[in-house]
Image (cartoon, rainbow, N blue to C red):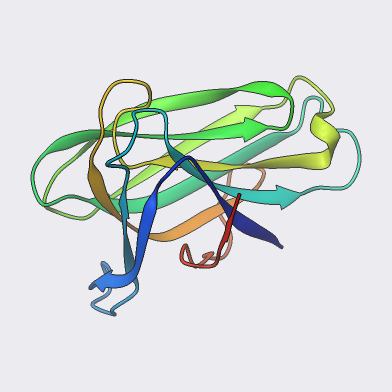
Length: 148
C-alpha cells in the first residue's frame, strides 16, 4: 500500500463529482499555481526495480476538453509521461514503465491536471490504480493526500 503526495500547489477537492459508476468519489485536481504541479501515488515494492514493469490507470474527465498528463515514475529517475486528451465524458487512461534503476523500491502513478510543463488546469480523476505488472489491480482513493 502507498500514499498520495502533492508536489507543488495542487488543490484537491475530494468527492467533487460522480465517478463513472455514479458514486460521488471523483476528485477534482486543480493546479492553478504552476505548470509542473503534479500529484503522485507513491507505492513501495520490495527489492530492486530494474526490469520490473509497473502499470497505472485512472478515469478522467474535465468541464471542457483539455490536455492533462499521467505517467509512471521511479524514485531518483526521470519519469515516463503521456499526455491525455480529456473530454467532458469519462475515459480510462493507462501508463506503463519498465524500471531501469533500483529506485529505492519506490514507484508510482503521476496525475497532472494540466499538461505537465505547459498548462494549468482542473481535471476530475477517479478510481486510480498502480501496481506491478501489466494488469491493473485495486483502486486507490485519490483524496488520501500527504502534503509535502
